[in-house]
Each structure stands twice: as structure tokens, then as C-alpha cells.
Amino acid sequence: MIKQAELVGDWSNTAGAKVHVSADHSLTASGINHAVPGYKCSTSMTAGEWQFWVQDGPHSLTTSDSATEGKAFSVTANTGDSPSKCDLVAKVQHDDRGFNICLVHDPDETCTAEQLLRKDPAQAQ
Image 1 (cartoon, rainbow, N blue to C red):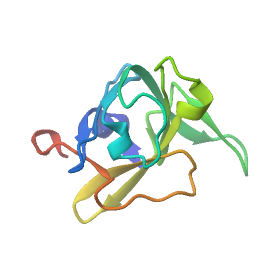
Image 2 (tube, rainbow, N blue to C red):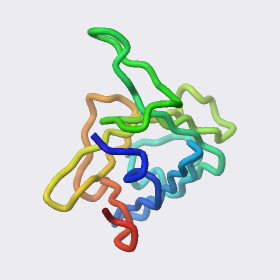
Image 3 (cartoon, one colour):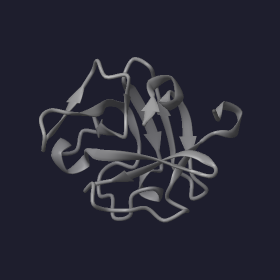
Image 4 (cartoon, rainbow, N blue to C red):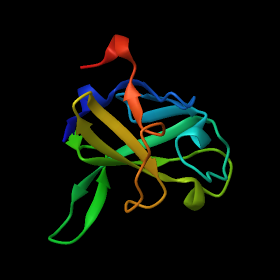
């Protein structure tokens, strides 16, 4: 689980993707195609939104504006393209280098090490 305060900030990967997560649930991004292979929408988001996924019963999840921590969050892409095909799931993981984010279309997908987003060094927790 990552707390909202740990999530807020700038994230990037070595391939050139950059994401800024704000406390007000807004999100901006560039180079998304460098984090999500086959991403067919605009590679930049200037007015995206994010929400943590929370348990909504024994076998279901829903997004929540009020949740302050989570294992994953949704990214709604306000890019002008069809929202349903542009929206992403961000899986939060933790390894020996700290938290990382894997952006995917389907929660069953995984990321390569090059695709993983990591918090920029000046902001890392």
C-alpha cells in the first residue's frame, strides 16, 4: 500500500515517460507510450485524473476520491480520445529500490523494468 502523500509528486522511467500526480487528484503525463506498449491515445495528458481503487465487497473494487492509500489507482485520461480505451490502471509495487508504478490497460498485465515509473530522486521517500 502507498499513502497519498508518498504518491504525490513526479514519476518517470528511463524510457522517457513522465507523470505528475497531484494531491487534488489531477494528473499530467508525457511519453505514456514509453510506459504502456501499444498505447494508441495521445501520449500526453494535461488534465488527467486519478483515484485509488478500494475494496467494495468481497470480490469487487471501486474507485474513491476519499481514499488516502491503496495498492492501485485508476488514471482517467482526459485527452480528447475515447476515454474508455485511454484510461489506465496504475499498479503500485514495492521493491528494494522503493515504490514503483506499472501503468497498464488490464490489471493482469505486467511491466518490464524499463517501463516502471519511479519517483524522481529528489522526491523519493
